[in-house]
Image (cartoon, rainbow, N blue to C red; front, top):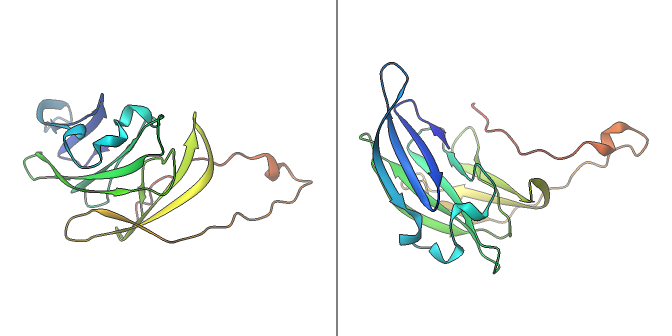
Length: 171
């Protein structure tokens, strides 16, 4: 998932892990391990069923978002975990996403919103989900939003460029 400078947070096999970052920059001991299936939204399975990199920090480094999904039913959601000053992970809440195959949410530079694109087997396609962010808990909430792709010039190579996953905006 990434680092907030003090802790490295990773995910796998239905767990989220927090490791201390040593003063030398090395990865230190595990500080926290949390089982995503023990919290609201576990019916959607684990992060194993969505794309690699299904987690994302907000720009404050205080909250981590984990996309969960299952192949067997229409179920996609985002769980929010707080990262304390000691690296402990705490479940904050969840939101149901509107779309199957929701990728990790990407938080806007002002930490007020996030967005996610849908993808399947590594191909970005289909749907766009927008979220507002609760400032007190970091929890994401789905909001109504639409997007319209520009119409490329059919005679240009631009029409053949695949859509890629957006990068977080550091500003």
